[in-house]
Length: 244
Image 1: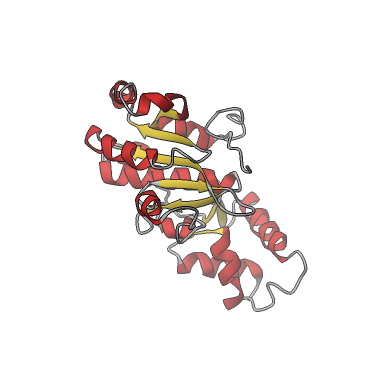
Image 2: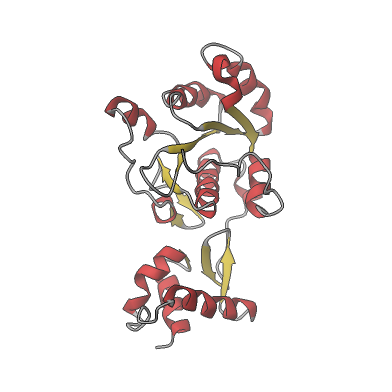
């Protein structure tokens, strides 16, 4: 079996789509010599990119996933009216952006789906790092998406809550403010129609005391970053201090 055939088999095992990590971890099942070369990872990427360039077998999906050419990606316009699916979709987007920034990523919803993959397949931290008191950890593990620094002891650098209805705003804010003593920003992502209501809540105690640390963005602004992160390189959502 060739490398191309081995990669295709891994993708078929995962319903036509996989992250690079999945490919790296499973390609040996079909190509036992895959890791014998010093730069075997770049070799696999080269094989795949060559085939993708030829529009032959593979294509890149999002920022860090690979799929078979006939794989049907989720269409955001088709799922915007479905609150549950949109919530999972935005979580997947935020996890992918965190991975793209070379941060460690954690999600409170590992079984949720994004482009046919579980978020546990995309996020890089299966469990929450034990960075503080157990009481704070118990609350933090319910935050939709957390980004952590990659090197050294892991501390949260961004807390992201997807507020798909105003009824979920207050619990989201209460979760995030538990991390007030750590060096991170808090993002609330919501529908455009909810922006003013979120801003109004942040003008109240206790959030008004740290209002400058809260950023409120609508879904479309984050989707624009996801679709072209290079063009949005100066956006504050991508500006994460990775070390203390």
